[in-house]
Length: 224
Length: 178
Image 1 (spheres, chains in turn green, yellow):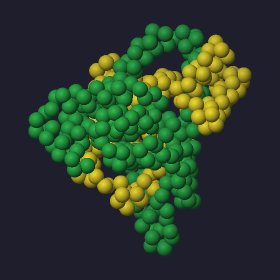
Image 2 (cartoon, each protein chain N blue to C red):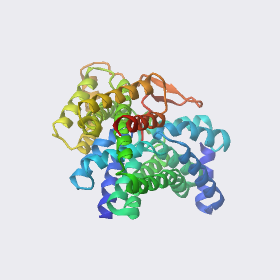
Image 3 (cartoon, rainbow over the protein chains, first blue to last red):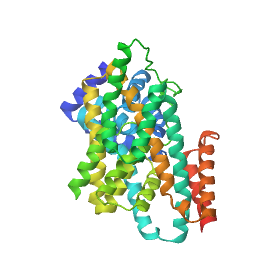
Image 4 (cartoon, rainbow over the protein chains, first blue to last red):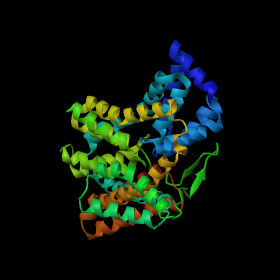
């Protein structure tokens, strides 16, 4: 990591345009290859950045993905920012994030135009009825996978149930709920320690990728 | 309008833990509160977001921005969504490289994960409620439920790619609802 860090610092001083263009192009390629949410990008990122370009080692990639998966935002965008920063500082991070975002952005613009023209055709409306049902299925699967790693004990199950009830009754702003969630875990773990209960902070149900990065099994239909 | 789009998605970007589908209720809440979209358009937007490359929540932001304020709206919303990622990751990469090993961060996720799960469960219930096929008639409702079940099986049992599931469901939709 040190070596990368030094390279990053050198790039900030010199504004290495060749490196920045390389970063940008690589992440454009990654961004256009990954359909199906952020977690679908992981194998593509690993192949390009670790195997082809040799920009970072497998061990570093593992750390990058752990941080990217838990920080807010999409894992693909986060990983791009991380790798870009390590290679060429803030300009590198910006180049990488712009690169990985651009293909999706263009595809979305094309989709919006097509929908504007053909969205009211009966056949398209019929297709969307089917797709809505499929998206419901995707969310069910994402929730199931997330639940498998999140609900480790009774406390977690109760939190999940209360969240759903609050949302269904329209009692709480979903954004506040997440902010609240940032604190409740810390409080609960403290309380449990006081009471002498053992709390497990591990995440079961993990899968492993080529580089040995293990992620919880809720990747399908993830995003951001 | 552009500023409002940018700020709204900037706020969402800072708290978007746990992936795209967990963010649907959050985005939806903001969209209806500001009258940016009708329910049907929002469901279509989520569907299109899932059928495009890249993160689902960012794709949603782009679509909502485009729908409300054209190209500049799309840019404002997308920037709002990705700038938090950029800031937070650069901070972590520069200063708190080992942050995820820290115990209080781990206990933070212990509490956050069930809430994210709850958001996803709610998103699934709510999305099913709103989907057009369910209210078109009893026959259509049964078909819609059948597609939901086949999608879940396709993803879990047969490990199908989400995009394939959506294309199949779209084709089925044309065949049965048209």
